[in-house]
Length: 437
Ligand SMILES: [Fe+2]
Image 1 (cartoon, protein in one colour):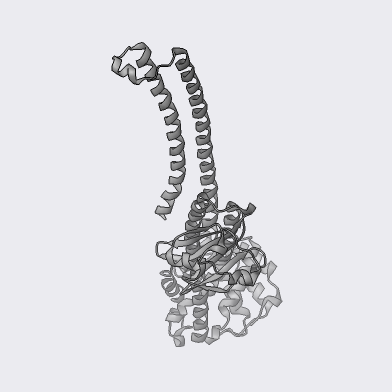
Image 2 (cartoon, helix red, strand yellow; image 1 turned 30 degrees about the horizontal axis):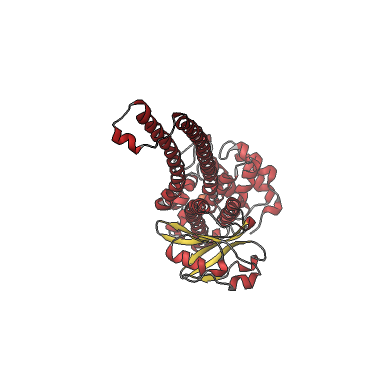
């Protein structure tokens, strides 16, 4: 990454260097000529030196000097303007790339991220078509393909080492081709499949510290132009940032996958361990969500509440099923659940809600005897949802009561066992049809 980054910077620095060298040459030529005139006519040097200098009249010499000075001035001004333009262009490019980089870093969804990378790459280089291929063991899979009739390529594969993209993936080096049909590595089979006529190609690796994870390929720069070195530099930088973002979204997606599957496994284990509570966790999650919607809870907090509701009784897994409903053992489940969940990083935020879901609003609950709003909001919500399900559920270990009786019971205990405001929101939104086994 650093090597290409320096390379990108160098091409601009080199161009500025070239302009300055030209400017210095013009100025140096004028100075040397002036020096020669001074030596010839002012300092009256030794005859031997005078002989070496051309015998031209002073008027001609002054005329030449004036002309050269004007030419030198013109070139200096012109070169300075060009340098300023190069620096300005470079600054604009850096600014644009920084904006793109921050947009890519903020993207959490892998599919949308790839779409964005593709769109930015096409726009920056004015390309007609392009694709992103990601490595999967020994092949590259077309994940995003843009261009005429390109959609059919999505999901197809290219062997590493084969064709231009395969070679870029294998070597980790960018490739710029003016006429693909004359290039030895060009594989015409893909054009035959899509009907696309590939001309110019810019293909760069998507690299991270651990290796090449794919390639970004751009085809046919608009206007029939060839891709320039600057296109390669900017796309190489974009590809480096893109690769980091791809790895990050993959990590986030893996985390989500673990979270969902681990939660499912734990739910099944709870249902298996205590059949009397079968389905309880999912129903509690549903009832909690009714309150969450009623108080306009933000989406991320709703999601947190959802997982806390699903896992609020996870502590029962470490309590012998025969003793689960014995008071002393039953009262241990919030603390045991907390200890189980706390070390798992993606559950860390919900551990406290599990710990406190049996606290009472009046401070007579357990395990910490918290009171009022000292009890986390999510725990106060779960307490209402859990009590309601325990009352109405037909699979409950207690004899179920009617919907109306359960609502009345919640109202009776509002302000003592439960948060009054939350009970009011729940009872005004819950309907008999919300109750399912
Ligand atoms: Fe509980």
